[in-house]
Image (tube, rainbow, N blue to C red; front, top):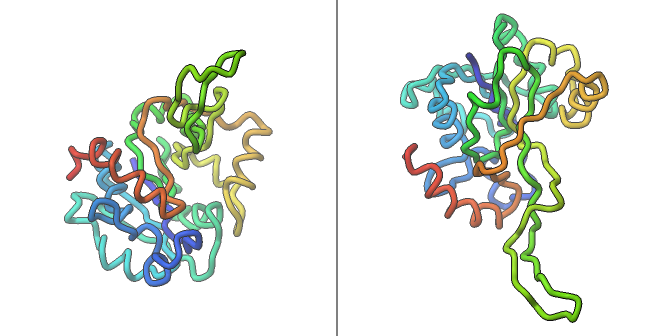
Length: 231
């Protein structure tokens, strides 16, 4: 089974770190994000990986190369112009058209320990991982007399869930992908409207999207615990 890493974006919100390197090459605990991702895929017995590259692609290709040192086999697709997440996946079709048992995809800015075996189910393709929406702030609890009764550090918000950027697809997804555009605003809503998309909850998994400088700091402590077995 194959896995796809979407690694072609600019990472504008992480400037100036991304002025001279692509977002997946930002280091967390001394290793690029994409290094951690490949080790996660390998840990889940996904040994054939397609990396979609674009912005400053040479850095990723030089670092990962053929994947031998990770004990995986890596192929690349190149965005000559920005295609968005949907267009980037569509660009992989020639490398995935024979994957009848499905394939995985992960956004190139995600750190997680989601179990891919739980995400995949041969009777249930086109599944996205969802994780709890957490408050960005700590919550103060108090009673009707305004006596403070306790504090909650960044609790989950009203049983709301967010797209974790980790997917298990089959060939059907290619029928919905745009030539250019983001999968989150094109293919996924269209598939949902036709009841072609499932969600799989990962309530207790580590998950972090690296979108800001603060995310880099916050992810490092948890990553040190969660990924210790991958070092």
